[in-house]
Image (cartoon, rainbow, N blue to C red; front, side, top):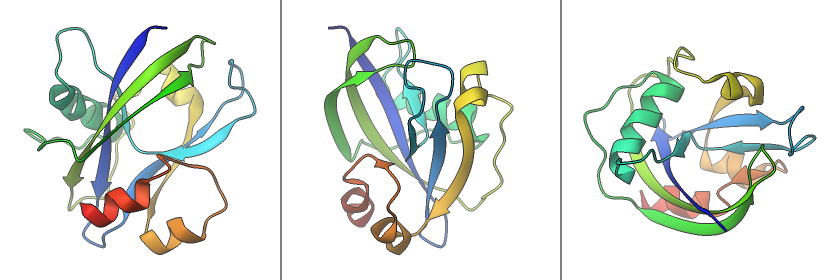
Length: 146
């Protein structure tokens, strides 16, 4: 099984809410699935997780930072990609605090435009109360330690 390294971001606003995107798959191998997840994506050849985190943050949100600190969490699990390929996903999580809630979709890929249906800033209380699928499953613990 191929390994896919990813950098994921806990983007936190001044109200201590975390940014999540709503993914809705319609015309791919994950059709019918819906979940909320942090911004982020694959590490490109030659990139570190940290460099990928800065790039993905800008591409998916328009927020620009010079660097991210050390990762606060990591998880590994088998994951099916929208193409149907199953990979070993290795994710590292980074925290970014922002004063701006204004986001840009200008850097989105065609795939992101198809599957990223919405975004929302979530409080810990909202995360505890929701019945919707939210990834990663330990997000609240990560936020409380951030």
